[in-house]
Image (cartoon, rainbow, N blue to C red; front, side, top):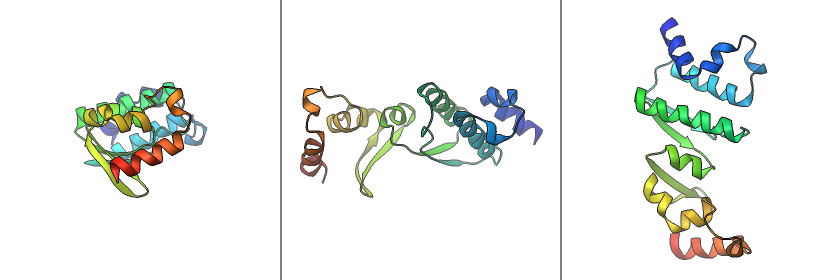
Length: 147
């Protein structure tokens, strides 16, 4: 158990500095603690649901950087459910885009990042003029292209 705790501290050195109760940790530190607790079980798969929710952009980068390291260094498969498509596609190797409970598009993270619809709908890669009627554009393109 001591070895596992030291491994968690290697990935999350910030947790080693904290001595108080978990309820007093910041949102990002609580997220790190949850991931660390999961690692203690030596899993083959970790399911993460919205790990970026409520975190500052700096903390999001830090948490996702660690998620990437866990996957590459420990070989832990991570099933990530995330609305922040930009960050998710940076750490993922494969992705699925779901609309109303249905998979409407899937592929490698690189292919999804290059897809024009994904860029327009999830990565904000359209000009301000094109976003005037985003709801109508989104609905039209999805029906025409995806469904």
